[in-house]
Length: 120
Image (tube, rainbow, N blue to C red; front, side, top):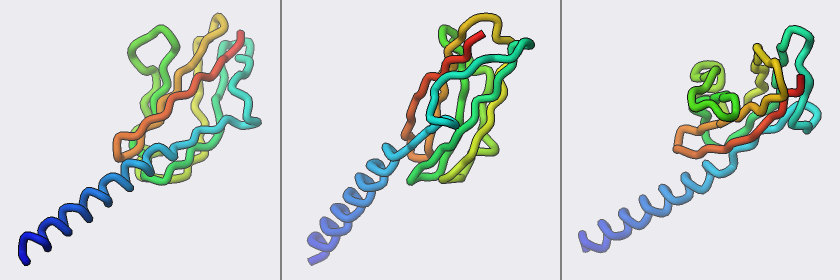
């Protein structure tokens, strides 16, 4: 009897774990106007804006210029623990057309990646 209870408990825990991991794939990142590009001003500045939503609480958001390995912006505070988030991330130093890689992470290890083109 104890063995059946243990097996039932183990199966329930496995199903719960699997259902939580499926939720992590529900991350969504949208850009204002649903357009993944914009034009920097004369000073080489642009703010990427939009909305992030997730079925699981967010962990962090990183922005990296394509071709670089180190993010220039890591947001581990304003996005943390939210499931809905309107964002505005400033980007400076744009001297040529540049792709920005935006990575959004949730607290279960889920991740989505989007590219945003800033034209000069």
